[in-house]
Length: 269
Ligand SMILES: [Mg+2]
Image (cartoon, rainbow, N blue to C red):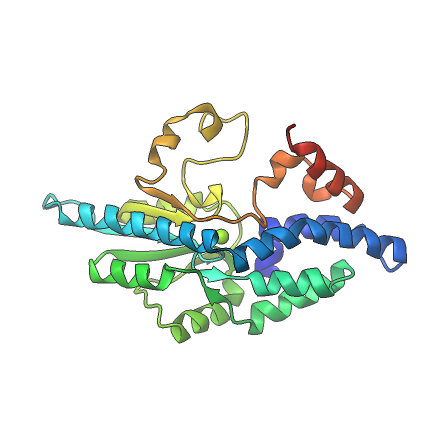
């Protein structure tokens, strides 16, 4: 559970479920929260549009990288690199979400299910990811995975990647302490010219944020907007993410009823 509870999905669900218990009323409340995720999970698993968007992102990223790699580089230029997130970018965890929605009746149930998934689960590969990674390798561009999966639990992740034939030369930049990926991005950019970032969360990109007060917010037409589809490539994830903070600033600590109300109030007529 460690790696996933610390993700935004985990934070959201944990906070919500921490207030639920064993009474029928509380179980009912928990079901309301699960209902919020069911349609999103179904869309990821069943829609052609989801797959199309994944392929679209990877195809665009590959076209960009081919173009970048074809340009003769200066003698002292840093080598090229690509930075990719893992969850919902390379690895699909929808089956774990389904187990959570169907089976969890309390925080403890949810925690146990994700701990099991973390240590033994076999995530599927996001459509287009495997081919894209091969293409990156064929271009001779270094590939770095930067994930918020914890370093003490990265062994199963490495095994899954190996089983799926996903090859990468570099160690995975897992989460030792902080969720913020910026320090890890800096470690990479100190030595490499990162030609593309690929992820499913704003936090997978150095200059993106969901903070409405930030100058880098895409809603305000910041320069970061011009990077989307150019060197930033984002995959769809309607299940979890920093966007929940826009639904309610304290979304992660709301009660199940409060979370449901906040979700309903967040949609604009
Ligand atoms: Mg992710």
